[in-house]
Image 1 (cartoon, rainbow, N blue to C red):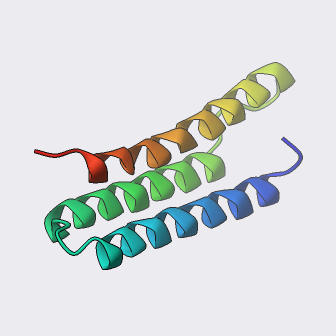
Image 2: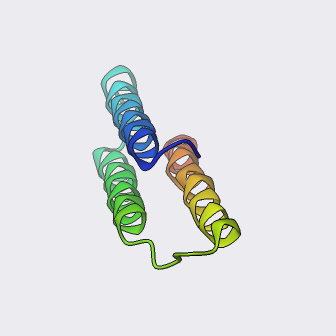
Length: 92
């Protein structure tokens, strides 16, 4: 990780793109369930807020290995937002 600033920028960019993807899905797929799209959007935003909170409140200080591991876990948790898009395609 180069810097917290770049991590937050990338997270904000990713969140914006995922929101755009959901809205485009709803616009182009006329039979899309609006409640399902809203649920996915809410999940993406909640995950974004949780990750930003975790970035700002790093409780691991001192040991460089633990700090790197902590921020790697945050980066890995970004994939949760991406996996939420799969819920749009599931037929229930």
